[in-house]
Length: 491
Image (cartoon, rainbow, N blue to C red; front, side, top):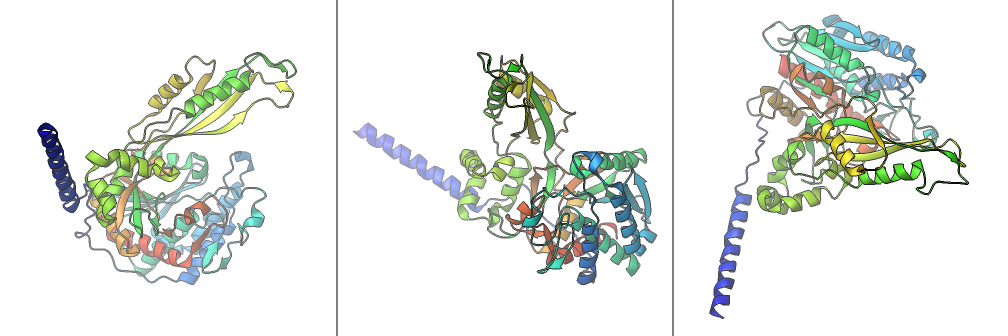
């Protein structure tokens, strides 16, 4: 009994020590990424004519620069209309900058600074929008390409993604140019024509800038926003993407004899083989890990989070499995922590009573920083084992981007302006989708992804969805952000 008592006493003492360590680490926790903007003097606010800016965004929405998966359906004349609209609407900005057109309709503007020793900054916003799903037009409160201004917002496809950024960026440029602003640091604007189909515009712009030996201080493109109901802090949080996932689509093909469906083979044929392969690949997900920009976000905001969250983050050595389980409980949370596997398309026989000679499925991967397309292919091959299928990339994969600095001068300027304009705390995070900015990695030291718009988690669903609209409050906030970012970084 004495031995058992001593063991129990020892266990109790160890538990007390563990509790003391956990509590101490929680109370003294300091995040590895500290958003310190105290050294940055943010340029003052500018005057914004919200009604005029709303009219301009409305007009831009009405120009149907729709990128279709079948590029033959695109209407190049609409891009010409948009270019003419920008030149006519923002004459002071166009007088201050030189304009170049690359890859048919992509735009590169340069506002030359007075000090060539300073590295330029690059601001991005693409011109094209996704189509409206046929048959859903009736579900819109306001027609998707009418650009109606109603209920305190501009409605229509592209009002957020990404004409909201494009127009408010030009509103900011026009305001500065009309005020007589002269940048010391060169400002470059890149506006791709075909971001929604992962096209060539931004690549061509990047090639042009690389050919001139340009190494920018930073790039800012779309990607993240101010989430007003952030589930970690239960409040507003300006999340700046410091990296984005890679993109790759794998075709899985099962060859078969084909023939009449009245005499199917014993193994079920190509469709059955394909099904087994897809289930095998999807059934071997990449493990979730508390690392990278997704973890950086949680570590940064932990001091403002509820005590339980702060305790878990401060003691990740002990609670990491719990953190991974809690974050990964939702699809968006899980996407921050690992490479995702999403079977998306299938092809079999063209008729219900014909056995296909080949059955194909497509799997879309979003590759997390730290993983690679080579690793993805290796895991897929291991998953299918001896199944008679062929695996191939439909086009060369795009690897995940490098992770940009959260200690550089560029980060400090961007974070300071984002905080000043939005009033929200700032944190780095991971963009789980893709942007044109990935092609600018070789042009800039750091690439960041942020739109200065207040959005709820529910609002995010209208991007590429139904009832996309930008509130007038967000419109003004965006103009202020771009004008003050340029004036702060380049002034």
